Image (cartoon, rainbow, N blue to C red; front, side):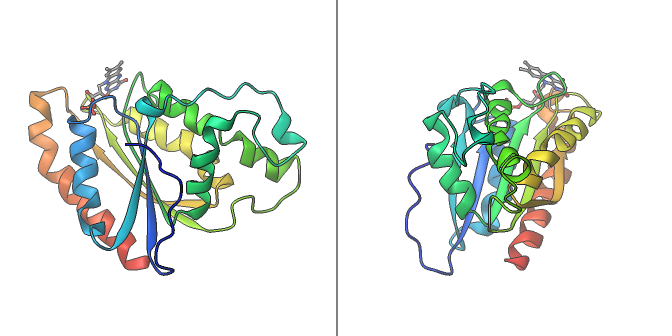
Length: 201
Ligand SMILES: Cc1cc2nc3c(=O)[nH]c(=O)nc-3n(C[C@H](O)[C@H](O)[C@H](O)COP(=O)(O)O)c2cc1C
């Protein structure tokens, strides 16, 4: 799943940009994402940035973005274009050690360029188009502590890319019987959230 160069769609076609944080293409995170995306089929263009496949380099704190509106590392350029064009941002991720898996954390650390654009260069809205976000989290444990931490972690990054989080769906207990006990509730929450976002587009 590569983030292709931003293609021209019809002017009214909406763009849903997914950041996929699991190394498993057929795991619990993929299943939850699949359920969420159903209402968007035929309605919006969906582009997926697969964090493990892309293996984006971490931010190296070179501070170039504090002097010019750009990043010194070009591997994020197509993702930058997708972020600017997106109407909806979806982050679908498992919890790893109460946090984002490392390749996805690297992607969100790279939003430092927008933070610097706003606070060092004084550009009020470095990303002009407003977006709505959905956070989909799978947790092995039955508590949702990791999901809460991830939600907190993403807020500053969402803020500098002009994105408001609509809601979060958590599928807890996936390490117990494959999460069967909690699957139906998580699927319904994912569908409901997708429909709520779709209605606002
Ligand atoms: C390296 C690693 C760290 C994990 N850390 C946590 C954790 O801190 N909290 C938790 O609830 N689950 C943790 N898990 C469990 C995963 O979040 C859970 O199995 C998830 O459903 C996996 O998603 P996937 O099926 O898409 O791979 C961890 C799993 C791995 C592989």
